[in-house]
Length: 628
Ligand code: COA
Ligand code: AMP
Image (cartoon, rainbow, N blue to C red; front, side, top):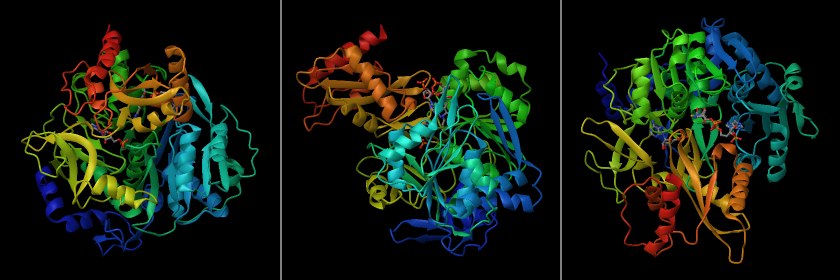
């Protein structure tokens, strides 16, 4: 019998044999003989001589192997009142036409394409159409403002951008076309084509030479076939926040990704082909890439694309309605979503309106699962509640309770044990391994397993500098935490300036750049503080330029508006305080950690390197007033 221990041990003692076996679960055009090799950057790569096509594995393979009439994609949109189900054959045909349209525009293997779309089936078609052609997609979350899109356009240099006329939020419709035009206007790089899907909720004016109506493109297209690509060719670039304001284009290759996706569906999520899996995320985030689109489809499952919220569309019973209506076996969402449901429906009374007998397991990730939310879910739903830890960089879980192999006892506050292939260690800043129970940097011994990033798009040195150089021989995760005596991993939070707002990864460094660009601001710090609903929220502290006379409340409003305009409403930046000094070390480093401790009312040690300890007084006053 396979146990977690036997599976994990084999993955680290027979690394190549383990992954060769998993890779053979895929239908390759050319099976790889080289399992693990080293590329020109010195980075280990998976299945280098293999050839495949990810869209083929996700669609055509199933059409050809008995699943043509099985449901592949269920679109459920309480914000528009639309529902639609696509079977595998229908989805394959729709994708082939979008691919054909793109091909006719000259998009081909190795070209980059940006997808800036809401949660509609066409976003999934677009991703798979790129994969079909061997083009590299880069999905930009629809909640990002024009400026963020412009930065990504300049980095990815797309041949084309696929978009829609609008996004629909519960309380408003957001016109995308003006954002798209602004972004292209701001960017140095100008994509040749922008293809816009018209939604009836708000039509776009197509008035640029590059504009193409999506329906017209598709109606004149011939279906495109799948292009074989090398396993190491990129499938996508997904930008994520780092310490600096410039987002990092995380690269994902085709072969390793497909192998890890397929393996994880059974091993982690205990899902078999034909079953229904629902990741309540957005295609703009890695969870959406991996577990709305690629993994469930590669595994021959039915996946749910939900354009709605956990509450308010129409109520806190929305998730349970979807689970019961579509026979969902496993639900995956961010803890924030459950905190929002719990706040409105503490007794989970609305869940009683639905037959949830289909639902076997609830998975959470994206941020820490706080023990109260774990206990609430456990009490109310009486099913395994599985916390698992992962990152955009890995594309799948680094630690999890692998219910498909062996369900281990749960420890609230822990995301359980390392998954196969991830050799996790806790290391101090000097590179020493720390003993059980001691908190430090969470690092993964190289090689990283399949699906993990082989680099940053167009910037391998940045990848090396941030992730590899600090601890030679290891990948530095950017999270801190500890392992207990039974090998359970506890994630205690980021060690850099990344914060997690409602499961969305954002950079305080980027917010500082925006706040500092206000003409009244001489200097600033943005710090993430705990929030009961969204996990963390950013708070700004600004020092005014000499001679500037502005009411603090007016400045706060202007800064809030500026961050919304430059980054987007999802940054949830709503508080900014004027201070006379920022606490700093003598070398000028802002003591953000101390500010956080003060904000949380926690004990803290004033570092001996502090320049002037009295600079903390203002912060104590701010937070004592805030808590009154
Ligand atoms: N496009 C445009 N704007 C968007 C957006 C999108 N795709 N998603 C969110 N926004 C906007 C919202 O409209 C809101 O704007 P507002 O300040 O003008 O009202 C702002 O960004 C914040 O949105 P949100 O985080 O959704 O906050 P909320 O208070 O409306 O809802 C929750 C609270 C908890 C219901 C919501 O945050 C949620 O569903 N969280 C779970 C998210 C998740 O699944 N994360 C996991 C990703 S793996
Ligand atoms: P993202 O790249 O957007 O998926 O965000 C990754 C970051 O989210 C991680 O580095 C963690 O800081 C945090 N995270 C994700 N999952 C968990 C989890 N289960 N527990 C604690 N933090 C998590």
